[in-house]
Image (spheres, rainbow, N blue to C red):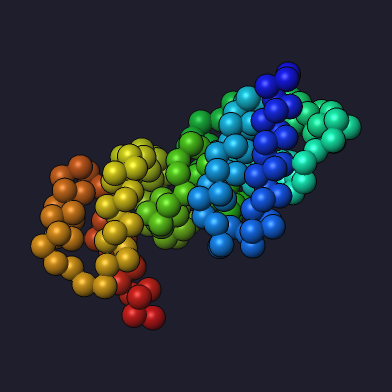
Length: 194
């Protein structure tokens, strides 16, 4: 419990420092540190890093003992609700997300996938537009979980023109089984021109 209190106090300090420093746009590293601290606290309660759960941790000040008790109670209630709900498969979660048109950030985080240009593209442009079935989307997301792969996809998405390095990345990604690669690259090329 003492460890949890220390984590919450540290998060409050980080958020306060971030706010006083001008927010995430002015200090990306500190913002990421806040995100990791939030994820660590939520993980202690068995909660995914969805917006709903992260909102519980918006402190922006150093919490008092009373604040800590209230916050820990809220986290326990959220954990009880989340963990007490019926377990759903990734396919069920994606089907519900499709029906409810849920935000990609929340859904991807709930499923344990990073929010990245490529994973969001798969969610919004492939799943939500009905271009492929749920199982194929899950398969594509699983292949792209690797940070090296996501980094390469990010480089290609922001490239203004392709040279030898970019073409090697494309070949490497294709060999690794990255689905929708042509669609992703075309989408970003059109977005850059539009």
